Every structure is written in structure tokens, then in C-alpha cells.
Length: 550
Ligand code: F6P
Image (tube, rainbow, N blue to C red; front, side, top):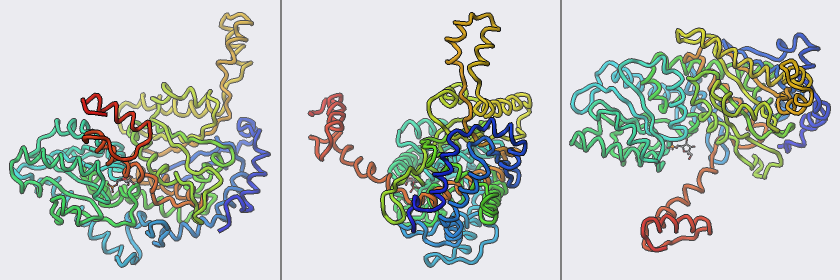
């Protein structure tokens, strides 16, 4: 593998960047009436407008050449065909197989993937239908009305995001809640609203060893048993989603009530697996199938469309352009769609846990920036909070704006304003507002020339700031599936260019190892273990507050 910076396309991009430093998008739009047509593309009902970027068609050609020289197409095929591209854990990466309606025969690590997936999907369907039609009952014979998904990270963020996004498809008979945080306030606050007789807990954990999830699951079990006073009640009120059958059994959940998945499904890519059970319970089996079908449609596009017309490739390579040539550190995501309010936390895990790496496939430290800091919030809320910095701050921030052409609520006028605001922001980022125009406006409003000259610089919008816009028809299960898969593949593209492993997450381990001795030090007779001065100081302060010796 040639180091990234030695690839001819990288060098060509460095040269090209020099000529682009003073590129002005406003002039480019003035000079080329076809810019939007050339720099936008469609996939199903999704439109990606990437014309408001500091790129020309030549930039795109260079970026695609970089993708080719990075063997992106071969890596993509390796993922879809089950090669062990997660090379530090020796695992295949096959979340795409979970959403394929017709799966080619595939045996991975001795497992007949097609057969196993179909088997679990059928069990999930039967279970979801039995909860919905009231056949599955709680220990006292009442039907299930509330479902609590206990999980964290990938076992929480994807399902929670999808359930919020598709709230308008929710079945009437059950309500789904999510508990993730170790902070007992999260579980206690949720349980306070629920009736144990009609509540089902889903313990979702790939490993079934995660501290937060096991702590919450144990507390939930204690709450249930205290109320129902029957140890046998666990069987009707707890199901598990995991790869670890032994640990599930040890926890006290009958393997009959366990839905398995496999270690070739990464946590942050697991909502398509049994981890999606809460989604199916919320929106019904048919809609869950539509979500999978949407993701599959994007998989097909990603596999088959030429690189130049490939949405995840274009989005991914634009991110490379900004992060590695323009030196941007962050990446803002602004869904003008309140139902997508959990999209940003979901994408933070997807992107930052996947590409927050500094060692490449040759086991060497990389000498370029990898994954960006992902942040954002739904519009229009963001406009009244942090958009000041996006428009007038000193940093360049690439952004994605998302909006639905149609809104399911009857409040059409408000939705019209929402769309207008979304486009107004990207237009303002692009066009900016010059000092001369502002001065003239202030003088016309009655200000003296000196006063106008002093105030105007503060009101200048530099403009020429980039944005992508993703427009979809409406937020339905199929479209949401497409959107999620789009971002999954975008993250894949970038990881392959940066030559890193997007599918492990060793960076989460150290804190987990350090927590137990710190916990012990908080209440033990004397502080044991080696800690730095700051940590010792904090432990001592907590101990003092508890009247313990320090
Ligand atoms: O600590 C990070 C992590 O391992 C994530 O990668 C994962 O999604 C999350 O914890 C939850 O893990 P599990 O599903 O095994 O409980």
C-alpha cells in the first residue's frame, strides 16, 4: 500500500488546491449557469446539491482519481463480499447483508449468513406481531403497552434516532422508551412513568458486558420483581439482543427470549440487526422492512453507480477535500427536520468512533488529519444558538443541511417557513454581505457616515462558505433507511482514503479500565492504586465531602 501522500492524485490535489485558494463560489455561479446541474445528483427521492462548495468539476475529477488510486472500489467489494476488512479484530463487516432482500449465499466464519439472518428476522417478526396483537402478555396476563430499550452507544443511538424520526409511524398499542445512561436518573425517571405489569424490557448489548447496560438491566429487573413478586416474571418481561448467549443466560434471560446477531455487525451499524427490535415494535414490521429496503437501495447505488455519480463517494470525498486540503477540523450537520433531532448524536458515533483513528493499515501513525469533529443540531434552533460562528467566525466549517419537501403535519405554513429558513442559511453562507452594502444600508437608515463606517465591519458576512443540501420528499421509513446508509458509506469512503480501520474502537477501552480502581478509591478505607495528581485531588475532595480520610 502506497502512503496516501505519495499517491499521484494526492500530489495533483495539492497543486490544484493552490489554484483554488482564492476560488469564489459566487463568481462561479455567475459565470456558469449550469453549476447546479453539474454539481448535484439524485438517488431515488434524494437530491444532493453540492454546488455550494469550493470545488470545480476539475476538483471532483481529482478527488475521484484519489478514490481510484486508493482502491476504493476494491475495498467496497471486499466489504460487501464479507472479507475481513476489520483487520485489527479479524472480522468481516456485513451490516449491508442484513438489509438485502435477496442475499447471495455467503458463509462467514462458518456461519451461513443468509440462513441465519432470515431465521432471526422471522423470529423478530413473530415476536413483534405477538406484542402488537396482544398475544404476548405480561406475567399478570395484561398486554404489553410500554417497551424500554436498555442499551448504550450503537445499542441505543441508532434505534432511538430511528424511533424519534419515525414517531409519526408509531403503532398505537405500544410506546417505546430508551434508557442508556449510567446516571440512575435516566432509568428512575423512565420507570416512574411505567406500570410493571405492562412493561417489556429489551436488554440490547452486542457484548452483554457493558457496565451501563448491565447496571440498568439489573436495576430494571429488581424494580419489576419488587412489584410483581414472582421470579418467573422475568421471562415475560425481558428479552435480550446480543451476540453473547452465555452472558444473556447468566443474567437470567431465557435463551428462548434472545435474538442474536453476529460479530460481523459493528455496534454502530447494528440497527439493521436484532438491535432494531425496538424500531420494529414502534413502527410495525412492514415499516421496519421499508427502512431496511431504503438502506438496501442506497447500498445498491453505492455498489453500482460510477464514482462521479455516487452520492456517498461524493459526500465522502468532499469531506477529504476540506479536512486534508483546506484544513477544516469540524463538520456541521443541520437537519431542518425536528424528527431528526437525534441524527447528530447518531452520526457522531458513526463518524467519530469509525474514523477517529491515527494509525493506518500499515500499522503506522498517519501524517494527515482523519475523522472530523461532528456536531450540529436541528434547524431552526441552531440559527438562534451557534450559527453566528458558522457565518462570522474565523473557522471554515463544511456543513450538511437536510430538509423534507413535504411535511406530514397539517401545519403547512410553518413547514414553508422551515424550508425557506434552511435555504436562506445556505444562501447567506454562500453570498455573504459586503461592507459597502452594509454601510449604504446604515446610511439609508439615517446613520452618519462615521457611525456607519464603524459599525459595518461587525455586520459583514464574509460569504463563500460551503454547504451541502440533502433534499428528500418526506421522512418515511424508506427515506430514513437511505439517509442512514448514505452516511454509513460516506464514513466508509473516508476511512478507506485515510487507510485506517473504520470498524474497530480501541480508543474507548482505556477509560473503561481506569474506572474500577477509581470507583474503589472513592469509598475504600484508604486510596489505593496509582493516580495522577489531579485525579487524586478530585478523589480526596469527594472523600472529604463524605467524611472519609484522605
Ligand atoms: O464503548 C463503546 C462501545 O463498545 C460501542 O462501540 C458500542 O456501540 C457500545 O459500546 C455498546 O456496546 P454493547 O452493545 O456491547 O453494549
